[in-house]
Image (cartoon, rainbow, N blue to C red):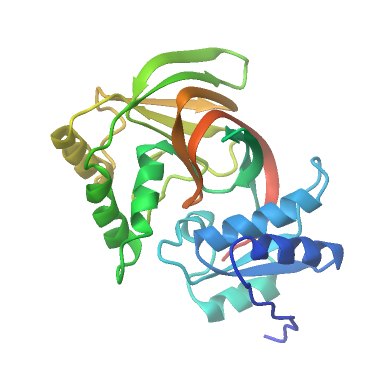
Length: 282
């Protein structure tokens, strides 16, 4: 399709973020991330850190080579390399929201962006388990990791505040099985945890699940796979522009399928509207 490009290979965790920041400083037009949701997560953090808060970042293209590819499919990115190259040449762009997090864990403060999904509690525990599952990809990988994570998992006590676009607050204090925050409907290779989420509506969808026994978690998992869990009595769905979570004992956190902290005490999430420019299929 007549494109010229420079190829940069990552050398370890976090290197894609450095490469994306360098690409911005070199004033490239498009940065193509070849990998899965974790690679995309690193790239967007490099691009967004390098840009002014009020500006859109360099255009992001995705070459979906990961195990789940949730972001690529939900954002409307091409699913194969040939179509991805043609999409870059065509230059069709979609501007989407991103979540901006401040996380305090082990007396350190982390500021990170996420483009697809954030999980607090059980969802992050599933991600930790997925690191130890070999030879599986996509939905099968996360199903096995989910069943493993259920062994010995306990709910955690939180102070949770969700603020909507008009400043109204929804407050929850007490034990919680998990909190999922979705910019898109899907995570984990096929789990539609926040099925009504939209990437460009100016809101994050928040799902809160009450403490439940293992057998109930298994039945709820089946409901999630069928996208029928939103009305379950143990599930509360909210829409928010700001989310605050405090947990004195510490809780695991994952962003876009990568665990950022195993024991976080404070989390604040705000939405940055239409910050990211993504090359799509048109």
